Image 1 (cartoon, helix red, strand yellow):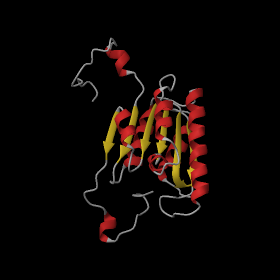
Image 2 (image 1 turned 180 degrees about the horizontal axis):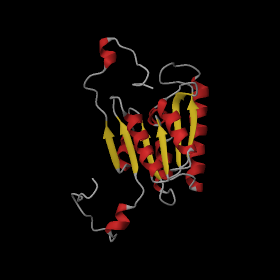
Image 3 (image 1 turned 90 degrees about the vertical axis):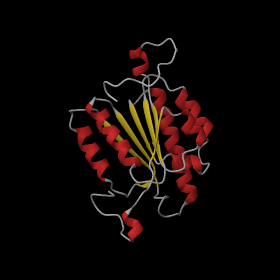
Length: 198
């Protein structure tokens, strides 16, 4: 809410400016479409501000070509806004359940890389796309994630997407949006299409 007024002002000893510039942990969850799309929209805003961006996709296959990846890579290479690094760790586990052990190992290594990057303050915005799944499946410990995110240095913003966000993550987040499905073309037997789904 630009130029808007917060509904409450905590008695925390911080100035309005200090409160306004605190790093944000955002979670986009729920059964509806648009969780990743909203996170990539946030990445566009961050790119426009000149922030370095790290995108970490946890369950989409490296073979999966998404339009947002191409667009953000082109923008990142343009030299006009922030840089964009794109990391794919998944094997398409959300669509084809195979190679469970390899996918679990890839997700764990992806999280280890995120931890290294947070410690080094590599990016200003981290998009942890579909990261709720490794948490929900128990591949990565939610308490460890929350501790690392709570203690992240500097002013690093993190947005996490995916269904079934653990309640502890929801409780710790500064911004939580739940996407609900009212209607979807798949309900009428229509598969995803180019330009809409990817």
